[in-house]
Amino acid sequence: MSYSHTSFDVPTCPLCQRPIPKDVPQSLHHLIPKLKGGKGGPTVLLHHICHKEIHATFSEVELAQVYYTIDSLKGHPRLEKFIKWIAKRPPEFNSRVPSKRKKNRRR
Ligand SMILES: [Zn+2]
Ligand SMILES: [Zn+2]
Image (cartoon, rainbow, N blue to C red; front, side, top):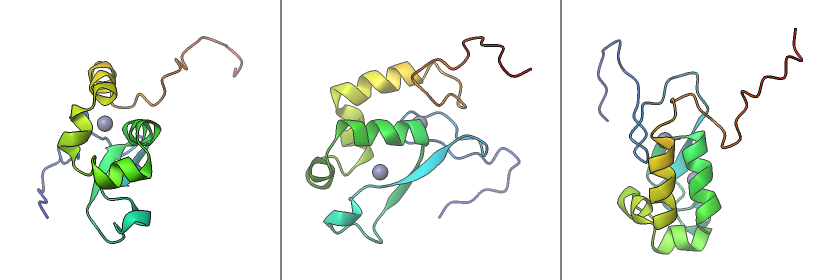
């Protein structure tokens, strides 16, 4: 429990090391999957996009048996690549598909 009362109090995503502003999609990841006995276990707050990437990369079994620490997650080649890629994106970035294609539909 580390809580600092600064106005700068924005959590950092342990996966990509970028801040997680309040208004961006974010979610809690159970380091040990709930189905594998991780209920009530440690959780980490991640960007939703980072969280999605974890589950797109690993099965619950892999998560439970091998990738139950942030360090092991970050050491995986696919996530390593993802982290390098996402690090260049703004924190509010939330999709691998560019959504800023000017459609000019909403006027
Ligand atoms: Zn992140
Ligand atoms: Zn998760």
